[in-house]
Length: 560
Image (cartoon, rainbow, N blue to C red; front, side):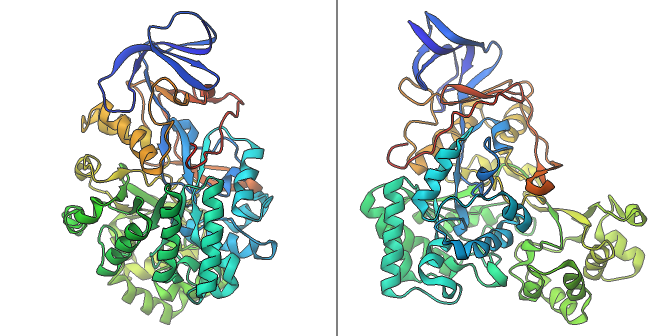
């Protein structure tokens, strides 16, 4: 028999958790047709001797909604063996969108996901209005990876209600129309809808992101859409205090589960220095909801980010920062130097939910002014003592002195890596939370899959290879109902990550590149040891190089 591709002599880890085995894999017309001893000829043969052949990794939490307009390989995820990505998370997205509202949609992405406005203005193609048209536009452009789309609730509410969507709940008639548009999108292949409960998620002009104003009646109606179609899932950025579910947040989870009858994945469970037992306490508190389909997400990496006070999204849940958003740098500096602002900032830090003011881990990473080079590599606590100043004042002063070009690095969560194995081995938690495509110059966790394999499987022995692969393939695919991906078996899509177990991995910290539209910068994490990323039977990356092939497809819920 003749095949399009045969992968020979590899060690197959099929994604189910089953023991690895030596086997060939044959592919024809984008599908796996044989696994075992394969005879016959092939147009292309890959010798995978000494390599692991795994299903392509499925990233359940990305924000590539805009990036797919200018990057048809969806980097850096493609470098790390990821073959399918799920977009539209946290209630913020670009469709549906009327032409006159494009700037509002862009500013929502700026404020929530820290993607520069100039990059969006130069890079987003806007060749759609409705959500089905958005999916179709992605299909026309072509893609290296498979693209899955979730309906972000904010643009749906804005499309129907207008700017008042940032001020109030929908009326019954408006709710009915939003539900109709959601149903239309689900019928077109969307994988569900997303929202956010997080106070730091502010939108256009510093107003609440529109989905945060949705009422319980609205959520009940939108959940009912998923119950009616019988497929899909819901994602929600739930916790205002990381790893802690409040009574109101628990009520929202319950409502979404009850109204939809579908899985609800939520953010986030991460280890906290101030309460090492918080994750287990929360799991115990919401275990009954987990048994009904509530799936918290976590990352396997230390959450290390860079702080840029010209784009202060990390502080959006502090009202004192509202006058800073979407303003010129000179106006931002004036606010930061204001005594009333500083007093309010110091007060807010006493109950900070994300930035915990551990000044000893707030380190100056990069400056533009040569005179300030002496501060690079030093922490704010040390510099404040040297200046005989309050650390909060020093934090602001240093940024202002460098015209807000200064970058801090900060260890937010999972800083104590000895606690991460307990997190990622907890079967009630889904590994994901990459945020690929978001926070472009402040953090990059899109390399979580290779970090899991290199750090936690090979170096630390925290879990078996078989279990690790299952966690990042079958589990996310199953949650979203992607039926023909995430495993290696005859009849399924030929998506593979082929890697060298001796070298696979990724670093904790990324590197800055200036490759966004208009020369904008982004932080990326390079991959090691990934020899092939194969999508629908065609190599997209070989030995770290782009092949130029774009075999990806737009995944359609109920048909994927």
